[in-house]
Image (tube, rainbow, N blue to C red):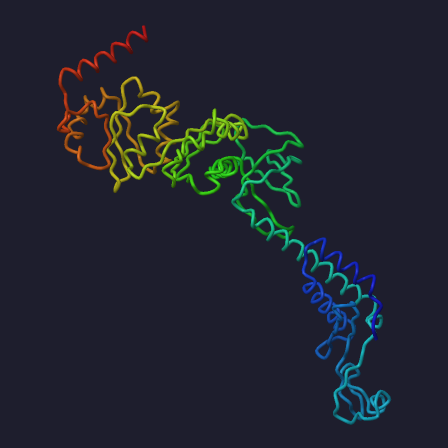
Length: 399
């Protein structure tokens, strides 16, 4: 018997659209729930089948029964007399479809079917949300701070909340409810309560994605961010490269009057950003990475991933940075273990002798003024005089 399901079908269609759930999935769930209701009512449902008109929503439930002389199992069998009441053509051994009225299932069976549908809808809704936010994994999104649980922060990302743990927060950054912040989606995973989204403000990729948003050349792939090292809340170094010789990668990222990089610095609440040019030659890359410090010479061992660097005496503190930060970030940016010495320290250690031997190495960098026209290291009076002058100027400044 056809069930009057117009209102139910309309409600189900609206629900599918609202939750972005496939109607095929819902129809399959209804079919399964009706079979479960049959089993709960009759003790088995091996011979049950369900037909649903996908256009109108009308459904029918049937039990396949065998025509017999004497009925031993009323769920699977029907007497010849009852079968012939339906059609005089039926004979012993025929299998006929007997429609079952859903109201005959009983209250318990109907409740079980309803619960099955409700559970499936919840599961599908979670699945759809998971897939939607999984596509946002490793991207930057804007969220609104909603609540706090201990030192952890919950961020509204639209349909779901992101979880910003204490370890993923930048020290010194403080938030209040309704603050809008940009976060990097580290991971989207499933749980019994639905998708769980882990977000970060400290991840190096946050800075990279912000540059992609702010700098069209990065977004279009003209300028590449080759490497990035970050100490969140304090300083970040990025190494950039241009695939177009007419485009200055550093200038593109900085922007006119620093507009582009300043927008990112503001989003990161004052975190300093050093933008340096990437170079395939490790020595030149290391020299760039130690910016803003000036470098005299670099000898890099690509196999051992180590480098010796010489800087002017007065630049040693700047090259190392406060609490070693500049050297540390440069090492992470380049992937090299960097040993930095001042000119005086290098000379006392005899390292300048190595420079002469390694001069032809392509991974060697030096200031040309320290070498003669034949490429040999010149330790003449002119250099000594220049060195003494710089040392004298430094002493005068200290006084």
